[in-house]
Length: 126
Image 1 (spheres, rainbow, N blue to C red):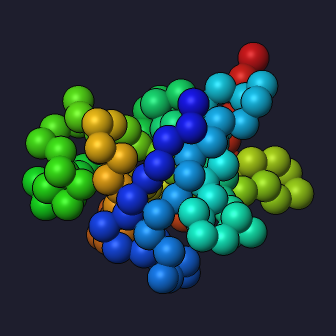
Image 2: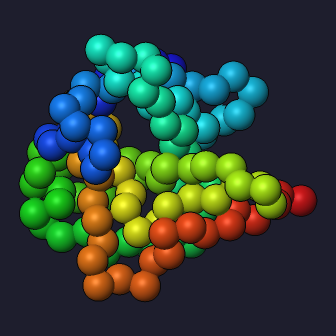
């Protein structure tokens, strides 16, 4: 799958970019490369939270959903940025990417006041 995500505001640290290609990473279901449409050297990796952190349940507000043109969880996908450190993959659960499944509108939501960690270790699958 390749999709285009249009952020309602540039993700933190990536201004002025708002248009991104979301490309599957072959052989890794639910792992995607997120590349700026006008500069392919700007790339992040994101994972589908429902597959990689199934117990993750951030509290999105009506405003968060409204920002991407969704009305509920059913219309949205949650992605989290992932990186590698010396001990393996970690994900940022404090700033998920909320995506409208139908339109590709996206917003990176900073969950101020929450207990979600900035760097959470991904558990190894059995």
